[in-house]
Amino acid sequence: MFSRQERVEIFMSRFHGRRDVFARRWERLGGASGYAPVYTDSKKILYQELTVSWIERHLIGTETLGVYPLLPDNTSRFIAADFDGEGWQESVRKFIISGRIPRSSAARMNASP
Image 1 (cartoon, one colour):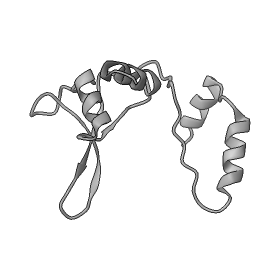
Image 2 (tube, one colour; image 1 turned 180 degrees about the horizontal axis):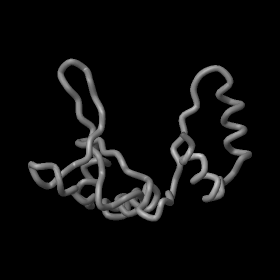
Image 3 (tube, helix red, strand yellow; image 1 turned 45 degrees about the vertical axis):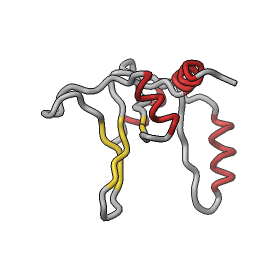
Image 4 (cartoon, one colour; image 1 turned 120 degrees about the horizontal axis):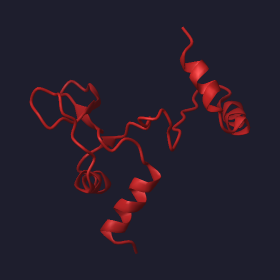
């Protein structure tokens, strides 16, 4: 059995994104929901850092948090992909076969109009 600290460390090592900002899930009475950055000030200028305390709340289910995976150097430590609809199995196969996208290719794709 892992200690609380070990669970947090494992989680943070697997889902490492920006540590200077994170998002929290919100819900309205009418059913609308989404994620928004957490701030430390009422003017919404200063981001809240992602701390062990916030991760613990996420792991026990009292908060639902989101991570910003794109790091300041334009790299990411993980990819989250969603495959839906007809033919999703073939899309997964192609995704796995394609392997890693070279950084220069990714930059060209993102720069498309």
